[in-house]
Image (cartoon, rainbow over all chains, first blue to last red; front, side):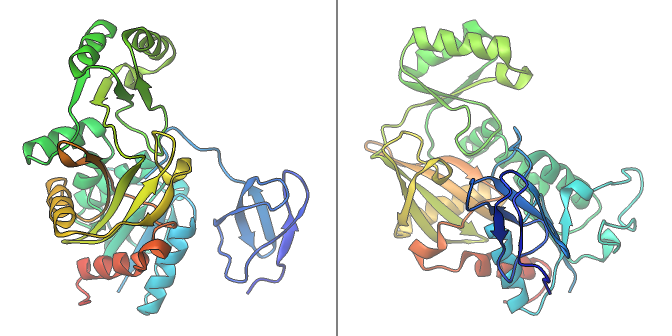
Length: 59
Length: 292
């Protein structure tokens, strides 16, 4: 159960709302600055900048 | 039923997969590849980051966006006798364009002409043999990164000089493909086990048509010809859950370009009407002995 559904964007400080079915380690985008963020904790809701794409990332 | 899903992070695909597992009453352990810490000289009784012994898992679904982490994890798990989707064998071939090409060639799967050379001089000769324009690709990599359509020997010299000077050893492997003059689209086909479950056209005005690069997805009918070729190609690389990229060549017909072993599909279920996540989960559970 998520107790907070919004948290500040670590890049632009905008208030970012997450869905009710959000999961830890899920990637989301900040609606204001567009930064890719990772939900590092649901309780309390905490967002971090997602890791940069690495050379070996892909399908 | 014990299932683990190995991930780098949760993307839309992983979320859909976890929901599909839940529909079967299965709650997989989600294991982050950043938390992995294997004792390579011990066996599968050692605990996974979940706290459960690796040996307790009936199947592990590998969904890492990090290719190196995913493949090494598969190597360890398969060595221990743990069932995985996909297998390390399949991942090893699919993650390397050169190995994919020679494997497809051995199985007589139609594909673009391709060559490899290891020095600037031999690379130029290789491109000359293919004829211009040709495509230089890194042997590993995804999402259309560092692909170069090479129109002339002058441009080839420049690209090769840059790769020779700025790149690591992998950039000194000059894998080149004949350029296929495709009709502003390619085909992405999804194979699960022995079936091509659906396919999309990826249309773009750019010669790189990956949806990660802006290609637009629309439904592509799975014809018997497409299904037969895709299933044959998937079997050639070891089978499993795979996404094949194909070109439509005006003279040669369908050509298999690449095969992806940890496919993205967020843009593909809607245009095809196929619940790709559900199909994948049915296959994964079947590998663990659960009837569909």
